[in-house]
Amino acid sequence: MKNSIEAREILSVTIAGFLALIICSTHFLSGFSNVYGDEVFSPNEKPSGIPYNEWVGKYWKWAITMTPEQSDPPNGSCLMNKTDSMVMVLQPAVGGKHELVCDITSKDAIMIPSWNAFIENNNKDDKPANYPPQQLSILAKKADTGAVTSEVRVDGKSVAKLDENTPEGGSTKVNTMQNFTEILAKSFNITIPENTFLSDQVPGTWPSGAHGWFAFLKPLPPGDHTVSYNLSVQGLGAENVSSETTYIFHVKSNQTGNSTINMPSNGSKLNSTIQGIPQ
Image (cartoon, rainbow, N blue to C red; front, side, top):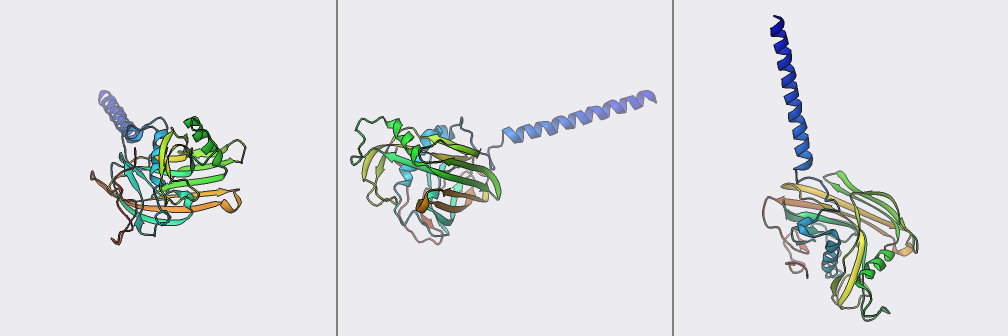
């Protein structure tokens, strides 16, 4: 009888240990193998093999092509650009409230901008033609002044937060930076069209730099998902910014998503389809 009890106790311990191993293994796999959900790329990762500091230039190459009409899309329309499995969304500095609806795929990452800026060396500025290109990104950082707060939510869950203050001519004080990354862009050439949404621009192709805070979301699973982000910039007087942007993404499984810059969901076309951005 004693040997039988001991055998049952050993068996119970063995089963318990086995179950614990399964639970731990499942937790490990869910934490490190799952590429979906509201995970955020870390700064040392390269979405689509491209480092963070190159994505910022790609973002501005697309954003600068928007007209004033396109930069204020009607609710229910889609404004986005997709390149190399990266979806780029509305520039929050335009301000206001927008609710957009887009189709993407379960392979697409999402680039969420907060406060950001670019500066080019055009022929109207007082910078010399041989001005060091990387210095342009430092100048862009100096332009990103103000008390900034941002938050990104995926299906109602907060996944990224930013709270920082950069006074004009002063140093940045970061109070909170969760899953946002401050980025000085690698220098790039930007082509500014005549009818860009930004005022006081010099049309042409110019050496450029950029700076800003961005969050990079990993791909979402198939289905409908809500991604929202806000931006508040105070301390700029009349130039203060307040925006709330919501995207409803219809995520398709392993399909080619659209790369439409602005297409209303009712089928009426506002402008042409973008097949990519200048490289």
